[in-house]
Image 1: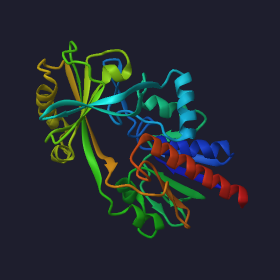
Image 2 (image 1 turned 60 degrees about the horizontal axis):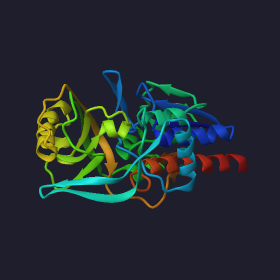
Image 3 (image 1 turned 180 degrees about the vertical axis):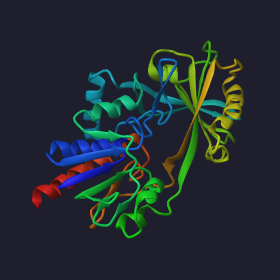
Length: 314
């Protein structure tokens, strides 16, 4: 049985890794020039900056084993169990599970997991049809490891997975990264921002990376992201004003970058980890469960195991 995985984010790579380990024939396609999906890391002036997901948490025992391997390899580190909470009333604190970060950027974790998986980058899949077929070519099974709206764009309406993916709303975000000449803010691993018209979250990328670089990354609200969908750079001035208001950061940044995520996170949760249709088309990703990095790994891994089990039983 040949399997085509479309999407080389964490879910797609986790699924493919399980299939490769089971001896199945797997092809992974992604339209980007790198793996990682929304675990995105950009290099700005020679330094990695996380511009997608901010961190990850660990609850699943098996995922903890994967994280332990990343930690041994120097790719992941415990970061903070306490985040700030910013609002018009000032600054508070919120305790929670340990948040983990990646010194080389979150994308490095997906790259590590992709070792042994053949990935064809800059390959834009346009149509998944009954059969199943991928751009007219037959496949045993097709896995779409991506947000629902992106899956809908390539799925033929005759495929069972189309109805499952259609109609679900996803929240957009613009991530604004800003590098400064010095650190003018206090201790701030990261912060949730409550009831603010522009910013929903701020992360100290120097603290997250562990190198103390004077870099902040802010995520906008969905309303701001929708307003600036065609021009993400247009969100930068409002975000800088918000950083001045919330963190008393008045220095002009040395550089700024804006990155648009039209499908940053799904609205609501699902109570199943993946969809595997009787017609051989499957859906996986962080939209299957609560929207976390761990959810993406679990979704892809469990789907890969189920496909391997079916293959062994056939």
